[in-house]
Image (cartoon, rainbow, N blue to C red; front, side):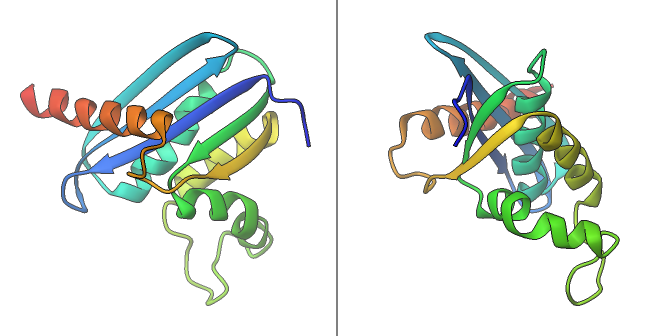
Length: 148
């Protein structure tokens, strides 16, 4: 177990699947917090969940000991259970199909290797304060996109 320097809480949201989507990441170091978010016009929920983790890690200015808390089993299990096998199989699944969202998985893999990351899962919409905040921020990003 590493000593965590930065906590990151992430969430993605999508209106329709595919449809307009948003992502958000809350970064916390001690008492300092930074909330970032963004949106895409046509995407999927899984892509937004991945984008949230990517952008959270990308926001770090140097190699860091990090904990990431996500409500996406797809993201957490992808990184902690499936990714090594995908890479050794040339980014193919066990059924020899192409890994969906490979572009984002490759990007997340590079960032995950750069930082010392511990991955945690929390049930979405269960009252977890930080998860509720990033869910709200991801949906606000969609609202802002749709206003443009």
